[in-house]
Image (cartoon, rainbow, N blue to C red; front, side, top):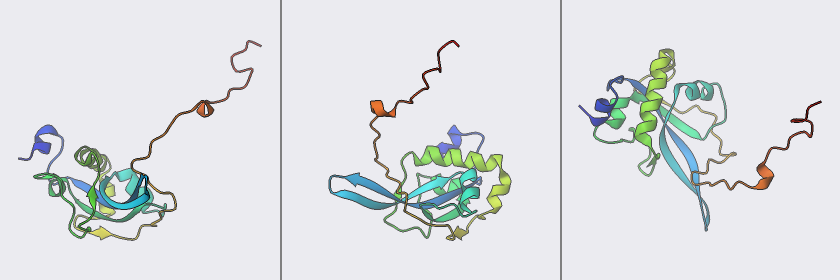
Amino acid sequence: MTSFLDQTPDLQADDYVVIGLATCFYRDEDGVKQVRVVEPIPASAIEALLKGVPTSYSQAVGTTIGAVLTDGPHVPVGFPADAEIAQEFVDRTIAATRTFKRTPASAALIPVGTTYEGFKFSTERKRVLNASRTVTKDDNVKQHSHTHAQL
């Protein structure tokens, strides 16, 4: 038995999950660097992506949780060797697997062992992995002057 199965009694090694290859970016002092990231895709996202929503995913593979998490995280066959495993990959894969258990019909969209490459791939809206958000006073929501006044 693998450790993830010991910690998740509601999951079996043959439970379905989709793993995607996304094009993301890191920002540093030299500019923006492109990286390819392997990460799980939840059921609701797959349904939207297959309807033609622009995405940073170039491909996805239908597989089982056991195939990608047994003896540590594994990059699916057919993905590039230079692809990085996403942060919190194990926890996110467990969560994505549960979404497919909740909506089993979604598992038929990309069958186990099948690679899908027909996404509407776009990097127009860049996914910056190390982006930080600095909150300023300008971010405060302006309220109408009568919002809290008794009329």
